[in-house]
Length: 626
Image (cartoon, rainbow, N blue to C red):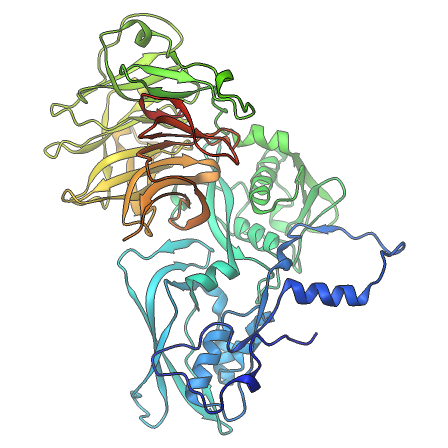
């Protein structure tokens, strides 16, 4: 197929050279084949619908190839060192199989040993490059390539944001081979600008078990077939799942797949059949697993692939190493039971203008505001203890208990929502009245922080009724926790951290619960990583469906916005309209439930595909169970 050059070389001004220190703009040295060109070629080749021929299986990654494909341009004869460097950097962004065009800019040994699939370096903008003197051979050109590092994607496809605003630097040594300049020292990984990275890669979740609950582990795979493995996106994702969890999440999750399990040799694509079943052939490592374990393996796969594709997936079947015999299968309903996800909430909650905890039920199917159920006081002791003023609250996932902080911020109380009675005694007190809003995880533990500068600490109340235990937060340093939200799976916690009275930044910590220890206080939070590194300030956050976070904040010099973030700190494209007035936000893990927020208009909510609506003119602190 003939390539369509984005800008034919003959159209460029004769003798035109790129100024030192600047890269050729994307598209000048590469060829693109887009959906329009493909459509023209297809229409030219078929004038009518065929009425015969074989029935083909629908590919699981169907639809991906409608995007623009980018191909590198091979080096011109007698190309200058600058043209070789620019051509190579552009060719790294291409869809060439095995990145063959990029390898043509390298020496034979360098091309053979270059392993760009091992990692990706993501830069916030383009690369700068300029010549520098060589160390050993002053006569041979040497180019320094630099940029501002945004993140890396490691060998397990996990995204890791750069925390120190570091610079990327590498040196490309050029040598002459048969009177042609070639690069002898290519970068150790793929190096892409943020825009190229977003064009080439897509975020997906793979799933692992924490206890009996499936946990989302975000990774990045190629939008289309991987140049090196030639696997389609679905197969890349399944391969990543089988390889094991990311290094960050690994200490707190497990995989049901036996060690060494991989796809059957030669598997490059996975497809659905007419019954929306995905069949996955495995190697011999999985041939002898017991049925319950196999079902858990299939559940991991079903949730992983469902997150990846818009195509309907009803069933996953695992195949033995012969590629034909069935090992086991699982349907969507059976996988849901295995996954042990939190129940869909019955209500939304907030603190009303009279400082009472109230609940409501918002109907996203109703167009008439008048038909929405009116808020009602939360049942139990809170409905009769009229003298008690609520400052903030959290409701357990089964909606049977509420944790409330008194309006003065001094006491944390856990009350029953199913039976009446007097207000219980406080389970935790703050002498300075600086308690944050509490948060439950699905294990039944309650989390809260004291922001008193003299006694700042993160606390966990085991089961919501046990003795409060101070939790070590590694890497917090001089920062103080201003707000928190535990994830439903109990292995991650989102923390808004304030340092020296400055703006608040979002961090995600891994919750480690050592097993077999008599000291329950050994639970700790480890490896804080930025949850929204693109934002200079974060004012509110909530966990959202599929392990994401809904974050309200602003970029440096920007306006307030509400955006979905992956738990690895990378931004998802989707955002919410009209975020300027939001100061608190709540989302459910059930995607059918609306986002609820607090703004200058009171408690507002966002039905799917609509604009914000007012739920209550007064009130504050909206929450979903959790």
